[in-house]
Image (cartoon, rainbow, N blue to C red; front, side, top):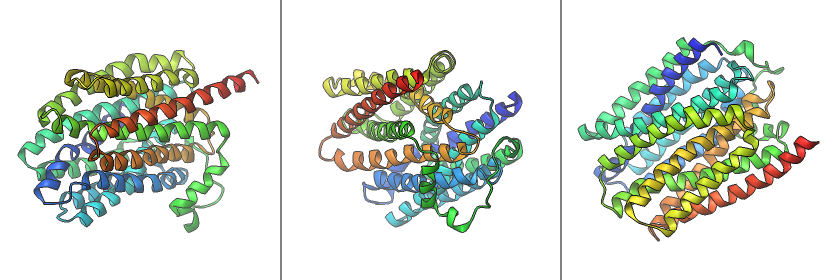
Length: 397
């Protein structure tokens, strides 16, 4: 990928990923102010992730037919419309509807981002470019959370208006700034039919590239996503509910995480991608995620709880690009678009169960979502060990 084009692409990613998080800190306030059911926080997120899960393979398949930058344009505008509906919602049905509509396009946007990087990178810098992309997503997501909280001090509507404008603007900017990646990817032999446009048929297409090793990778991705979303969704509510900490503390924690993520991925993350075999070293990130989650189940001290979350977030930022690179490393020009779409779906599938279950079981006990996260990370680590053992045999053969 040409360096200047990649930098411009990342610059727009900064805007998009910040805007994607503007509404998160004001969503609880929206639900309370408009007298909606408290379960809407988890249910609405699960609804969005369900659509993300369903449509990501379709967007991945579509990336093979049209320029990826066109998909970024469509998804930026579609995401903005969905959040406009969500921000104007006065009923539970409207909240779910807005989040579902947005979910169709969030899956497409993030699938297009990773596909664009894979398609326009060389085999030598693909891993480093994917790491940089995930770093931008994590850091700017945290900064966007902080910015959304500040906008929320003005009003809930201010955060949503800013989000809609920036998402739509970013979609347009992607279209004019990014290069056409058509020359870099395999052109499908058949035109995209209405049957293939069915989101669920895209899952059936996974059989064309699925292997036993990829099954293990995707299982690790999905199950660890359950742990990630269960942990993240309840942490923010827990520190307010149990420790009585306001949104200013949450914003500060997110800012610290953003800095830590940037430092770790710019140093350790890139070193892991360039100097180690990530098919082996990814397991250490999974072990660390599991261990840190286990610590907070034993020691519930307020300071330790917060420090553990910051460290866990840093490790998580290292884990995600390694898993994504493991998938990309097994792709071919013919199936890379579909595989990256399927990767996004597995992340969303885990997110659905993580967010929904965490919200439903919190009322039964504030620590239950964290126990769920620990179990999920533990299972994904065991699967990771199985993958690593098979990978060593694969290398020997």
